[in-house]
Image 1 (cartoon, rainbow, N blue to C red):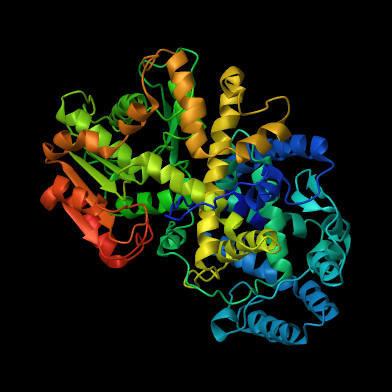
Image 2: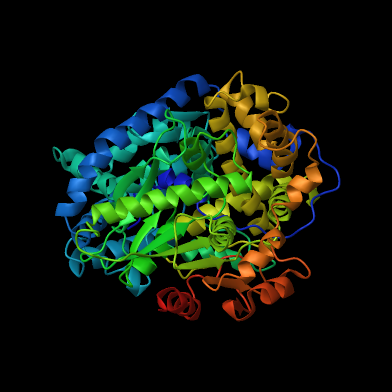
Length: 628
């Protein structure tokens, strides 16, 4: 079900965070000032925002309303009202907007779309039972939504400044001023309570995802502003862009990975555990638990990739896949997220040995919590735990397997499955930096517009109701968006470090006197500089690594090569990788095959995590996971 505006744009902000798809490329030789960098400018100020001081607090108000009003009510609503009924009401509401869509299409001179809309309305109102069933789309009559804000934009009226409206969410001056005529052409406006009921249906359907979006970040404001602004620009273009000159990277296939059941996330148990050894004032670590009607002891623990949270669509898609096989599935956020490292009491994430030790104890606590919840001891059920990690989560999985080989792990997992782990984490992070800097190699007179169009293209692809439609992205677009996405993840780390009182550690590179300065400097911070100039000095000051330790030695310890003897000695490890994963450098694939011998499955295509919706790949992974 495609949510209505403005919910669709707010959901998009969460969706833009979902795909961590690093690729190999070469950064530009010269780096301009941060304000001339297309990515930094796009992230920091995608639209004029002189009312920042009012808009930011309103983001907190809207987040509060979602988390403590809409989301609790939606849990009951989604339990009582079947998805088919919700979808029917959504279809009916959209059909009811025919007058608005027809008039605004005609005012924009879009006669052909107006004719499609008219035929669509007739078909859905008759064959579709007043629009409750969408009978028109299968007949080649798609939705053609327009509004007065888009109409003014087509007539040349600019958006004005950004506005964050109470309860209504992100907007701008132009769109806010046209909400009244939009309402006057909505027949539901003239029936007491009808508009409220129809909007509530859409809100409650999307509230679980909005709640996860707000809960997984210490500051969603720049992401919401970026997502709304660029998605709105894509709407004005009707999703039409110049044909790409090259195909997008295969890694973008991960965008298709999401639950088939829209209510899957809503059925999760939201639980939390305290990590053993964490400071007393550290918060508990939240996790999602997807239970079975009858618990048989089989538990799958899912570890996401870099900066991914437990509610990301791709991670939920994997959780659903294994839940359908009868496994009890638990999902946590990545070790490189504020949610995880705040629960450990650690300063900054990135010291793999320490992060994995915390992770080992966290997963053990989650296992014990599940067993207690399911009364496994009383029912004499023997647990069997599988750790399943992708990308950074796969690196963590292999480190856990090495601890298991050395007898250091309290988890005692039965199997460790790693999907697309980079052999060298720092090289992977440098690749992400190069992705973000890619626009610097584009012509100076077009680079800013091309970067903007890239985000508009992905916005159109994400909200498209047609999952089979590939994004209208070329290779450069896809690579830049990868860097853009992961830079947002680094912002979350920097913001959390500030909130945790680490301003002294941030001071050399990050101004913390205002949210705007912090965001600007965080967007300009590369992962390479984060490791070398923030993390490494902080660890030395904290005494976690020797004061005379060399940076090169510290970096070398993160490579999987250091685990080779322990991985070779652990028969419980399984590896899945792709030959054209652009995180693999020369010699990496040979090293992986030698290290894992007959325990590695290498697929010929798929990029980085881009083939996890391919039936043959899913069958192979499920087969290994369920093997006795």
